[in-house]
Length: 149
Image 1 (tube, one colour):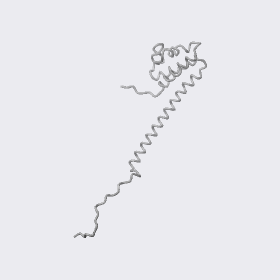
Image 2 (cartoon, rainbow, N blue to C red):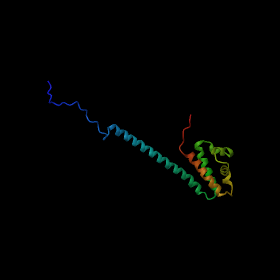
Image 3 (cartoon, helix red, strand yellow):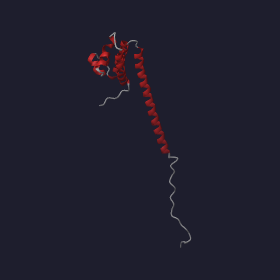
Image 4 (spheres, rainbow, N blue to C red):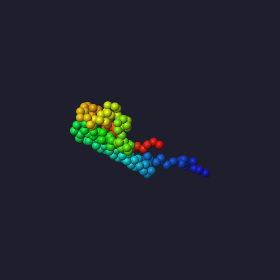
C-alpha cells in the first residue's frame, strides 16, 4: 500500500511563457509595420516637396514679371498650361467658357481675361487675383485622381 508519510503533490503546470522576447512572428510583424510607416512617411515627404516645387514655379514666374499687366499675363499663361492637365483642349477656351472652367469670381476672372492687355492695372487687383489663381494652379498641377466610374 501507499506510505502515509510520503507527501505526493499534484501535477504542476509549467510557468507561462514570458512576454519578452516576443516570438519571431511578432518581430516580422513589427518590421513590416515599420517598413509600411517608413514608406508612407517617404511618400508624404516626396509629395510635400513636389507641392513646394510647383508652388515655386508659380511664385517665381509671377514675381519675375515687372508690371502688374505682365504679372496677370504670367498668371494667365500658367493657368492655361495647368488646365491642359485636366482637359487637353482647355487652353483653347476663351471668354465665358474659360471663366467657367477656371471657376473664379467675376472681378478676378475679368482681370485674368483682359488684364494682360491693359496698360493700367491696379496692383491691388493683382494681389486679389494672385492667391486665387495660385490655389487653382496648385490644384490642377497636383496629383491626378482617377475619375469615379
